[in-house]
Image (cartoon, rainbow, N blue to C red; front, side):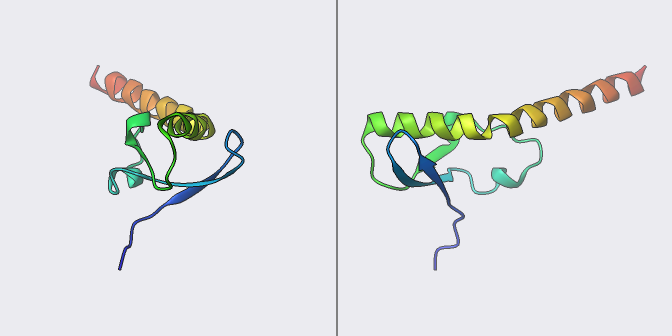
Length: 85
């Protein structure tokens, strides 16, 4: 039985849904993890050009969440630094 978590994106570029998952199944649950394009694994069969388009779409879609995580991490770092002084 396969318990992997996968996601689907309705690709505007390809005009169909594409299944994908994170390469590292554990990191996706870390609050401060900031994934990169290399962390995305496309499940459906696509050409290399289509894969690049889909990965760019996924990164664009999760960008607001990544910005929030970066802001939160920076705030925590500032608080740690100010607590030391």
